[in-house]
Image (tube, rainbow, N blue to C red):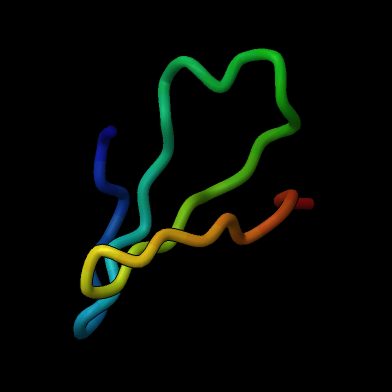
Amino acid sequence: MPTIVRIGPYRFFFYASDREEPMHVHVERNAVMRSSGSLR
């Protein structure tokens, strides 16, 4: 899970193995993960 950037308590990252899905970024804060949706 390479981290793209950390902003305050948030970590923005991606999974290298998400090749079958549209490009997107995950966001984590205090061990709670959410997908941010597609990047366009």
